[in-house]
Amino acid sequence: MPHHLPSVDRLIQALRATLGPTLPHALLRDAARAELDAARTAWRAGAACPPTLEALASAAAQRVTRALTPSLRPLINATGVLLQTNLGRAPLSAQALAAMAQVGQGYANVEYDLAAGERGSRYSHLAALLTQLTGAEAALAVNNNAAAIYLVLTALAVGREVIISRGQAVEIGGGFRIPDVLRQSGATLVEVGTTNRTYAHDYAAAITAQTALLMRVHSSNFRLSGFVHEARLSELAEVAHQHHGLLLLDDLGSGTLLPTAPWGLAAEPTVQASVAAGADLVTFSGDKLLGGPQAGLIVGRKDLIAQLRRHPLARALRIDKTTIAGLEATLLSYLRGQAHHEIPLWRMLTTPLEALHARALALVEQLQAAGLRAEVVACQSTIGGGALPGETMASYGVAIQPDPAGASASAQRLRLGAPAVIVRINAALLICDLRTVAPAEEPDLVAALVAALTA
Ligand SMILES: *Cc1c(COP(=O)(O)O)cnc(C)c1O
Image (tube, rainbow, N blue to C red; front, side, top):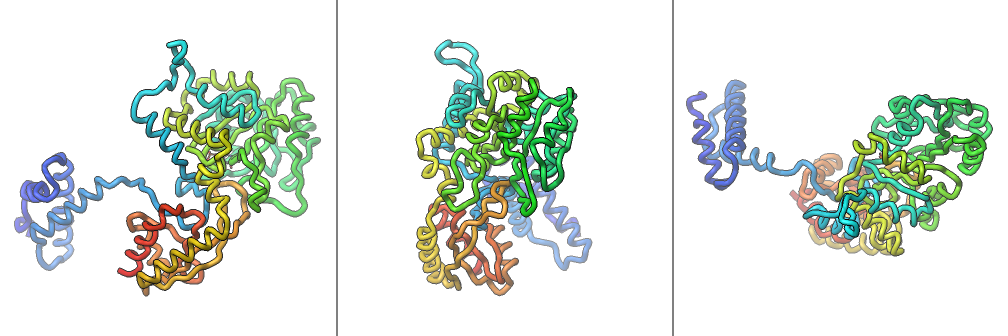
C-alpha cells in the first residue's frame, strides 16, 4: 500500500499549485508528511483504498491553512458577562486602539524627554493623569495587578510582617492566592480576626516591631453576608499611622474611577475614595472596570512610589509602549468626561434597557426572516471578572431555537464559526444577551447564527 501513495515531493508540488509559490518549503513539507503519515496509519487500521493525490493535497492544504490561522482571534461575547478573564476582559476604546496602533507602528518618546533631548522615564506618561484622576501624589503602572501587589510586598515588606484580615486572605482566581503571593515576596502573613468579622482593634493588637504594613484586599469575587464586619479603610489608616512608619496597602482589585451605584449596581469602591481614606498605596487593574488594556496601577505616596520604581523587580514587571499608549488614551477619556461614551465597558454598562429591547426586536426580525425560530427575552447581565460579585443588570437578548442536534451541539458550532460566538444556554434555548454585543457586531452575529443553525 505505501508505494501507492505519492511521494512527499509530488504532494508538495500539488500544494504549490494550489497555495502559490511564496510559502516556505518546510511548511509545505511538514503538511505533506503529516498527511502521508495519516494515510499510512489509516491503511494499517484497515482503510479500504488509498486516497487520491487530489484528496491528499486538499487535506494537506487544509493543514497549511490551519497552521497559518492565528490561534488568538476575536469573538462575539453574547454571554452578558461584561468582564470575562477567559474572553480577554475589557474591550478597548477606539481612542485606545488608535493610540496603540500609532505608537506601535513607529518610534515614540517612550523613555525620551523631548524638551531636554535626553533620557526620560516611561512612567512619566501616565503619572500626571493618574494623580489628577485619583488625587494621589504619585503613580506607577506595571504589567497587571498581581504584579503590582507582588512589587509592593517585595519592595516594602520583605522579611517583615503583613497584617491581613482572615476574611481577606483569599484566592483571586487563576490560582492567585494572597497568602501565597505574600510568602513568595518574602513577607510573613499575620492573619487577624475571624473569617466573618474583623475589627480595627484586631489589626492594632497584632502590630509588632516586625510589622511592615496593613493590607486590605477588596472582596471582589465573592461576598460575605449576614453576621459580618470589616474594618473601614479610614480606621485602618488611623491604626497604621498611629504607629510610626507603618503603611496601609489597599488592593482594590478592579477599582473604578466612576461610581457604579448610579447604574443600579452596588457601590464598587472608587480609587479616589481609597486615596482619600488614607491608604498609602492603592493597587488596581487596568482591564477591569477601568476599561483599558491589561495593567496593574499603583497610586499613592510619592516616596513609596519612588522606592517601587527603583526596585529591580520593577524592571521585570514594566509595561510596554503600546500598553502605555492604550492606558493613556483610556485615562484621557476619563479626564475629558467622556468615559461613559468612549470606553466600551462603560458604554455597555450604561446602555438603557429600552435601547437593548429595540435592538433585540430588530435582530429577532432578521433571524426570523432567515428561517430561524427566535424571540426577544429579558435576561440578566453580570459584571464578572472579579468585580461586583452577585450583581446583575436587567438586559434584553434573543432566544433562539437550536437546530435538531440540540443546544450544546449548536453552541459548539457557534464557537467554531467565524467569527466565533459565545452564547448562554437556558431551558434548551440559545440566549444572546445584547448588552455585551456591540451594535457594530450585529451583522456578523446574525450571519454567524444563520450559518451555524441553518446548515
Ligand atoms: C483581579 C484581582 C487581582 C489581580 O489583578 P490582575 O490585573 O488580574 O492581575 C488582585 N486582587 C484583586 C482583589 C482582584 O480582584
